[in-house]
Length: 290
Length: 338
Image 1 (cartoon, rainbow over the protein chains, first blue to last red):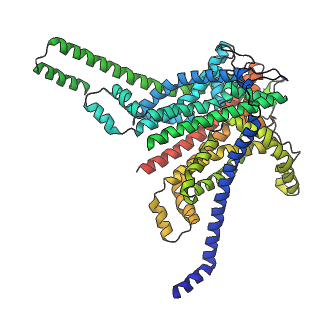
Image 2 (image 1 turned 120 degrees about the vertical axis):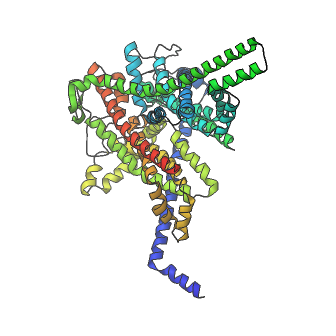
Image 3 (image 1 turned 180 degrees about the vertical axis):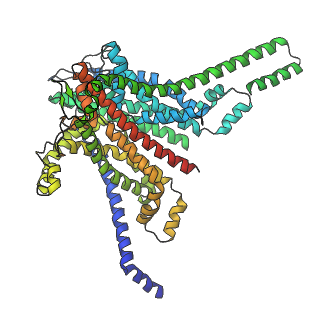
């Protein structure tokens, strides 16, 4: 009885009540903040589905971007995006994997590695429009015209830091005992890395590449003044090349209803691709962990 | 070490009195292995040097491109509000102002909200929901910025124009400072709307980094605080937050770097007007929006060069912010390693 009485007295004391109140308020705010954060995701995806699905049809994938006021599709933009993305990955991935290998295997603690690691982190979050300006200065200005190559190079510059980072992270998860076992049977270091470390870190490295693809498939800013745009179907890498994000940018800001509708459809396609890629990438690493 | 191994193997071969031909081919194989080893080492080293070259290349290319404009306008470029392609007089003050203001609005909202979401995820959320909510927040970070832009232009800006902005203008009409901040016709687009969209974009970054550093707090510390009778909020406020201060600030800086350089989401809703006005509802411009809107249409070398100079300024600002962020996160990592 006595303890209960003291407990009620403590509960009633203003200090305790105040602390409890603050705790409840903080918890409530945290809950509200989470709802707020998730609310945007639902809102954005909801609007995107509502506006984008309406425009989905076979024509989107079989017809080129139309002139103002006519019906059409996004074929040339989709093909352009695919070509430039694939090329960017082909250019950026080898460099990224090799550099990540150096950081994780050869120069774990040397000075060069810590500088490269720092610079890579800066590149990872550098504004993508600045990358566009860089490629404009080194490729477009000397060549005198916009081109698909310039677009692919700009995207490759974005791919490299992502792949470097994940390759290094994944290789450093490979247990050193594997490396030591390989060294003990006389396997040279390069062969140990290629045959053993890469194989152990395979899923993680693939995840890195997928994340890089997800990142560049929605990038608009670096393409605006490198690949520019092209109203027609084009496989010529030396000429301006259309891409999905740039077409969305141009069509969304236009006054034509058909163009705006296609912009929404394109936006839906990009979002589905990006979310799909990041979900696949995530499941690859989580399957590996378990 | 490699040569030592070879000697041993050769001795072993001789001991077994194997034919000379085998020994010779063995030596050839070992030589080949050593060569491929050296080549691979060289390749990886070259690739990591290429990353360095990339960053230096970006800086050199930007300085080269910006040189004509900086040479013409000098340091005055930073403090000049005018932007006139006809008379070829350019100044960076309005874009810099817009970039800073929109990022400030974004951080003002994203920081407290992001912290509270991370608090919820690490301390309050039931275990079953933790992973799905965490993934959902990270998906929000993966949505390309152009999606935020198109959504902002067609959905969010009209909403702001019809409901939010008139409400703010009416409510604060007679409050001294706020009436200037929230003045003018409700356009829908403008710096305030751009700042809000940036806030939504930055929120997931702030949240996921804060969550990661909160998770790294040793449970013993929290248990001790609970043991002396702290409430959940007190544990968070007086134990978790002070312990992770450096990492959390590093996370904010990463988010800020993102907000400063963000292009597409802002370009759609900023209005692209090169003047500075006191009202947040007025259209403005940011560095990245100016470049995105005007670069392909820029006529004349000086105009193009002025835009590249804007890019150089943006790169310099984000470089500083990101460098501070990385330095702080690195310090935290070293602290955790001890």
